[in-house]
Image (cartoon, rainbow, N blue to C red; front, side):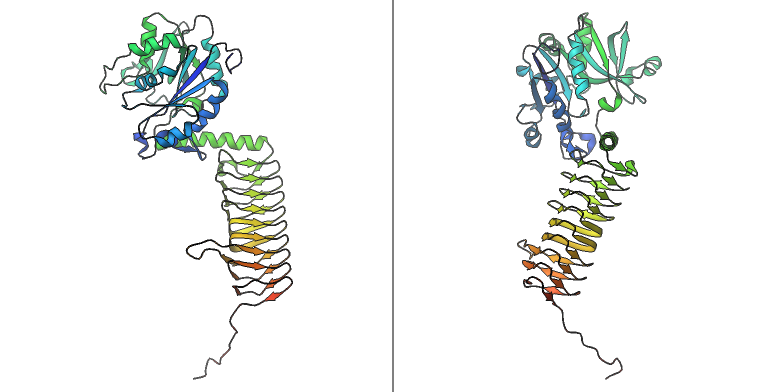
Length: 436
């Protein structure tokens, strides 16, 4: 039995990912463009893997990055880009003997529910092919799906549509599902009699209709099925993804003061009772524990913030930063590869890189760890309950002991033992300004 409930036949998903995305005006393959920090192809794979028995990804030549992302699934190369039907034909040896569904990497937001519905609809008596369709507010250049008595009769492109047909907002999303034996036959009947001399998968619909086959248009939302072919369409999809991520976070107990100004990554983990103020950005790999406040204009990436901590405003947490329980990271503070202990405070104008800070230690304004000598990175270790005075420069590698105090304005180049007062500044000299 197939992975999908009530589906008896083996199900194979073929994802067409060979497009270069010319209209993206980018050297990056279209499938690799990110939404909330995750490549488009990965969104589709995450859902397809849970529904289909087998996944095949069609890539173009020299698309090693796309092939690597598709692993461990079967990858085939479309050496010559001769259209979508030609791309699907490259995967033909892997169709199996059950049903095959053709999907597109640039339609990344198709949900698991819709994918399951495609397979279940195909199993219904009298359905030879399932075509995914969407009701578009603005159909743009999408082909219109023309139905009669509940069955698809044809797909007409916008340029060829009559005024009456243009008023029909049911649009073709390109996704097809059929039994393998029939689909293979239709695929080989497609011709390239068009201006680009390419083989278009949509023509399989016309071939099937001409045979008298029954094709069902299965509806799903425009948010799910809209294609991404330009940077402006990528931005629209990003908006859709961000709305979903914010809603999920708020449904799980996160408070967002102005949700539309908060930007999340696909893998952001926010526990309940987190409060996020306006204009906060989360990069990849962030986990924020319960009771944390993230204040405005902060940027977090690759970090962990533990229970009850306060971040920002205007704070930047870079990869490998770990903020301890009830710790404070204030305005214009940047932390990179730094562990800030429980209850520690770094409240103003500070950079800490490759640093360990003990519990309840206070870091004064203007403190800098000099962790890079131009060749290697070095570590700074600051003990518990220490006090680092304002405008201190800590030249790594260096270690500050527990309960030690560093005088303001010091440059520290040597280790400081526990419970010690350290000065590392030039002696002050006062002169009479009128003296000659």
